[in-house]
Image (tube, rainbow, N blue to C red):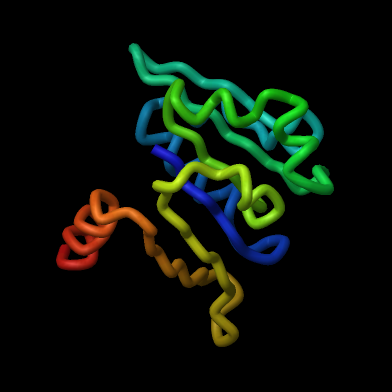
Length: 128
């Protein structure tokens, strides 16, 4: 599974990732991979890879570090995924983060997917 997170600085991408990882009990181990590009986490037999590709200038740099090799190894959460969009696999969940202009503590998430598999999951979540 790949989560492609898009949004301005401070829009909540990293906080979302902390919340996601806390589901797996990993909240104490989380740090932003801004300078390391990717942080790796493992819970039971689940591999989770948190990418922050903000400092990359293009897909070539992502390929050079072997970033695309992670896609089949576990769950990938990619902040600033628009920088490497050409390198992303065909199936992913796109989460667009924005600020609520009326409340600085509220973020709006628009979630979509280019995959029917994930679209069904998103539709089920929106019903709850």
